Image (cartoon, rainbow, N blue to C red; front, side):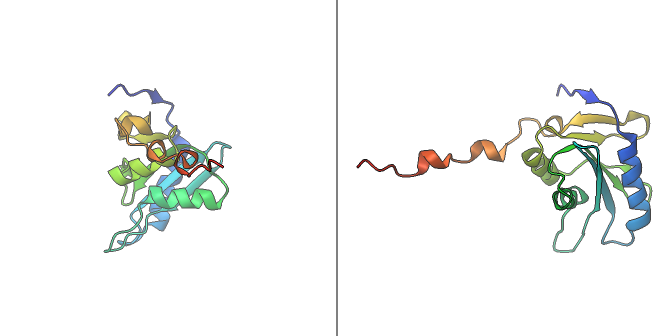
Length: 145
């Protein structure tokens, strides 16, 4: 992998860490995420764990951002509760994030090894859902009359 690193947005890490410390209590909410929208705003969210499955903080963040009219996210980070620090997105989240925000940068690593990488570096040889959708103009029957 030939990862290109970018500036680490420490304000995002602080926002997610604060949310993890103050809002993540018990087993239902154990991760917090923060993202910077292209307009500079910071959007935050926590996961919603349930024994049947549930959305990770990164996926809740996608919906929270849309609800705040922040459809273009630049950089994202997830932080675990109980001072676990920065946690990289799981495989499912990586796939969703690359489909929604192919230019997204994600903060990963720990301590002095924190770095910001492209979501595509976290999911090499990515399957891009939009690239595999049929063009409706090609599949609609054309009238010959």
